[in-house]
Length: 365
Image (cartoon, rainbow, N blue to C red; front, side):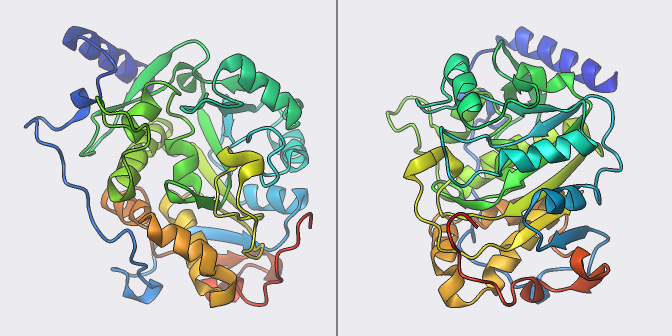
């Protein structure tokens, strides 16, 4: 009820102000453009981070299968209740690297029988640009075993961004507010714009609607480059979008990251994605957004130079690590955490131990 009231109040305020899609409405009250942070190309080792190990727990299994996905999810689903949205990147047609639909089918059959997969249309023209095209792509990629709600099929809704410097609100697919809980199933990989795509990217871009919200994140109005916002500013805008969503769901959200088929390209690129050269790792889960994305990055950086060269180059060249430091600044989780090995009786391990003995990537395995 409180969330519904908040959204309605926001809608009344926006109507009174003349609600439109002008991104400049989201700038600070002094009408001065905020200054992006720095350091998105600088990895901070665990022992150099401020503070002590928090209560944030990240679970880890090397079992890359439907059973592994179920095992990881069941560690963190204690507050998932009511009408449940399952946020996935369902991929472009025949994309080779997405989470296998058969794994998700097994998970939903066992633990999320009434869950709904959610997506939004894309900002770029392609297989998911319109709802009609999107639904055809969903069929091609095997997402037919559960209802799929394209959140912006009908309209948009704005959610407040608390404490942001780029936005006071973010435009989402209007159906997002029909749900009580959010399960975030993320294929962790590289990303052309973000450096890496973890749970933060899956939510921040994936819940923003295809025409307004994504434009606010990606594009400076009045110039021709659709993708002109980049590096630290892009990371901060995307993260503020994520914050609007996770603040809405509160404690009723959890995160699962699948470190498999990790191309430096996003699943948005489909068959055009760069070949995978980074070894497969496993599946992680948490109720702490920053902790799970940070743990994945820590595992990447704990690999040998041969194993992680391409991924590290992609992350640092895009200044993608600013996602992590900005999540910390916004209070979206902890960058120090406890990593629990589900394959060895719940033993506490380090990222280096999770990255030990990885096998070279082989397509199809």
